Image 1 (cartoon, one colour):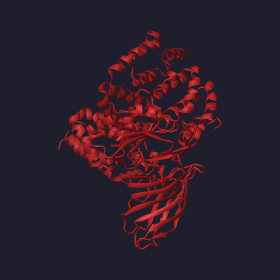
Image 2 (cartoon, rainbow, N blue to C red):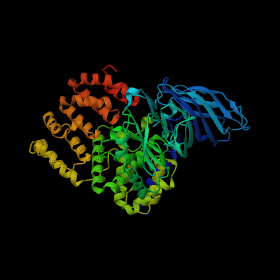
Image 3 (spheres, one colour):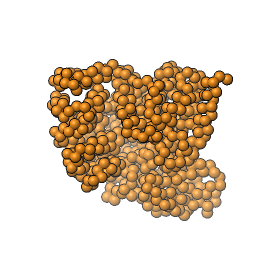
Image 4 (tube, helix red, strand yellow):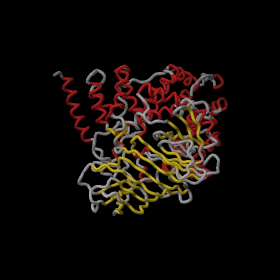
Length: 623
C-alpha cells in the first residue's frame, strides 16, 4: 500500500466516522422522528382575512418505529390548540391529553401529545387549532398592497422552519410525507397550493388538493388571492394577479423548454406539472421551489426574459432539494450548491456556452466578494462539529456558489462523460430521500473517486467541504465577452472613453450587472449621472440592473436618483434588493434621514422577514 493510498484510506475513515455521527436528530425540531414519522398529512382549514388566521384541523398518519413509544412530539409556533384526538385500535376518535412546552424564540413550542391511555399506538392523530395573525410563515396583504387594490392576498413562506406556524407537524426536512388539503376561502379568491392545482376548479365546497409525492414540511405552501391562470405548455402554466398575468405569461413562455433541458441532463421530471405563482411585490425572496407550484417574485419580470435564470434555478430544485433533500439545515449546500450548479448547465443547453460562462463568472466573482463579509469559520460548506445547534451552521449565501464551484471542479476534472452519469445517479439513487453530506461523500468516493482517483484527493475534498474560502486549486470561469467589458470599463473609469462613446449594443443583463458591480465605489456621481442620462438605468425594467445602479449611485453620493429609488423601495419587497440599499443609505449621514422617512412609509408593504432585516439596519430610526 503506497503513501497516497494510506492517506486516502485514513481520510476516508475519518469522513465515515463523521458521516455516522451526522444522523443525529435535527436540532431545530422537537420531533422524535426516530420513534415515529408522519407518512401522510391532511389539513382542513378556513382562511379568515379579517382575523388574519387559518383555523381547522390537521390529521397526521403515523408510522411508529419504536413500538414502545407512547408520546407524539410535534413542532408549533404561536398556534392556539383547541383539542387533540387520536384514532385508536377500534377505529374511533378519542380525545387525548396534550401539553405545550416552553416557548423558544427560534423553535417555537413543542406540542407533547400523550397516548399512553390508548390501546396500542394510534395510526392517526388530529389537532384542532388556529394560527396567530403574526404567524411567521404567512403574510396577509390588504387590498392596497395588491395590484388591483380590490381584494386581499395571503401567501406562505415555510422555509426553513416556519411551516410549524401554520400547521402542527414534524417540521424538519428529515421527515417526508404526502398530503391532501381542503381550504375554505372568501368568495372571489382562488386558493393554490404546492400540490396538484386544477385551473378549472371553482372552490365550491372548499378548494381541494393532493400532493402524491412525499415532501418535507418546508415545501408546503399556500397562496390565496385574486388570481388568473395561463397555460404555457402541456405541463407548465402560471398563476398571477389579473393585471400581471399577461406580462408573466410572456416572461415565462420558455419554461417548458427549461423542463426538457433539465430532463436531458438529469432524468425525468417526477412531479407531474410544473406551474408557477407570481406573487405580489412583498414576497421577500427571488423564488421558492415549492413542488408543482414554484413561488416567484415579480422582480424577475423584466419584459425581455433576461432574468429567466431564476426560473432555471427554481426548476433545478425539482432534482436537487425537492427530490433529494438536505436532512437538516446544516447540510443546506446539498440543496443550494447542487441547484446552482444545475442551473448553469440548464442555461448552457438553452442559451449556449458563452451565456452560461458569463453567468458563472459573475456568480464566482460575487462569491469572492462575499468572502470579505463572512467570518472564516462560516465560510466552510459545513462544519465538522455535531449537528446540535444552528449557531454552528455556515453562511447560507456562500453555500450556493461554493457548492456549485466544488461540483464544477469535479466535472472539469472527470469530464462530463463521467460526471453527468455520476450526478444523475445521485438523484436516481436518492430520489424522495433526505440525505447528509456524509452520504454524498460516501457516494462520491464509491462512484467517482474510487474509479478516477486523480480527480480529487481526500485532503482537497476536505478543504472544499470544511475549509474557509475557495481552494487555490479552483479554476475560475473566464468569459471572453466579460474580458472585453473589463477593458471598456477600465477606460471609461479613467476618462479615456467618454460615456457618449459607449456602445453596449447587444449587452446582456449579465454584462450590465457585471459593469455596475465593478464600478460600484469607483465611479463618481458625475459619471453615474452621465450613464443614467444615456441609458436610463434608474428606470430600468430589469430590477437586477436597477438595484446595482441605485447601490453604486448611493455609494457615489448621487442624490439625483432619490425619486426613482424611493419608488423602487416602495414597490419592491425582495430582501436581496431592499436590505443592501437601506444598508448603503445608512452609511451616509446625508442619506440617513431620507432613508428613515422612506422606510416609515414602505415598512408595512414588506414581508415580516424583510421588516426584521431592515429594522436591524435602522436601529436609530422610527419604525
